[in-house]
Amino acid sequence: MRSLALALGSLVVLAGCGGDSPAVPDATVDGASSDATVDAGRCGADLFLTGEFLDFDWTPANAVGVAGAVWTVTGDPSRTSTTAPNGRVELCVPRGGRVRIDVDSPAAPQPPQTEPYLDGIYVADPSIFTGDRIFSVRGATVPQLQALFDGKGDPTIDPDAAHLLVEVQGGSADDVMLTGATSEPRRLYIPDGATSQYMLFVNIDSGAAGTTGTVTLTGAMGAGEVPLRGRTWTMTTIVAP
View 1 (spheres, rainbow, N blue to C red):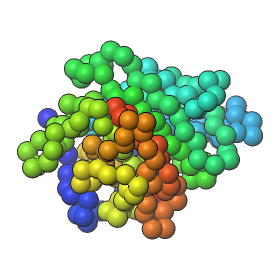
View 2 (view 1 turned 135 degrees about the vertical axis):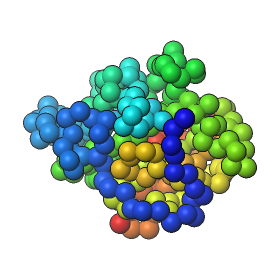
View 3 (view 1 turned 45 degrees about the vertical axis):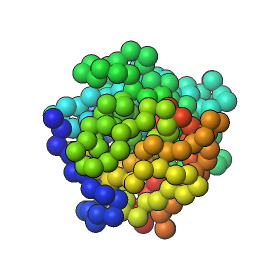
């Protein structure tokens, strides 16, 4: 069983560091890929976006990436990347405005999981990925989400609802909010070995056609609108003040 620091969103927690994770083998101590500067040249005038897509239960002792997930810039199938065995993502994206990336998770369960990871959407704000910043987000199955809430007096995870994971780098995630959509009470969690904090919103009522919510945190970079739709795991990264 994983060791998980779990609290209601109002809990005051220690500030996280920005962007680094031992799950990426070539990461430097500050979280930047050692070849990020060289790799940037492959994208020309576009942004070289890199990070990691990890199992929801990732820890240093259980370092499992989500392998074989296909990340594709929405509306542009030429901009696509398949995650490496450690979950590494490398993708060229436009620099102008927020970028939506469709995440097609493998159809078969990835051991030790018994169900497939939810398909998802990652929303990137290119303005925060300057220098060597990378992202670190997590894939989840419905049983993994349920295990997070079991025994805490919280509701059953609805597999048909929308769910949102907000990665918060650089400061406290305590005041992250979601507006424009209704969810169960937010949850803040910090997995063992993680250097980012995560705010989680589950069972979002997105309607049959989906909806748009807004991630807010005063003074944060990268906060803004996110698409929400049923049976979809939306992810985004912000940098706290």
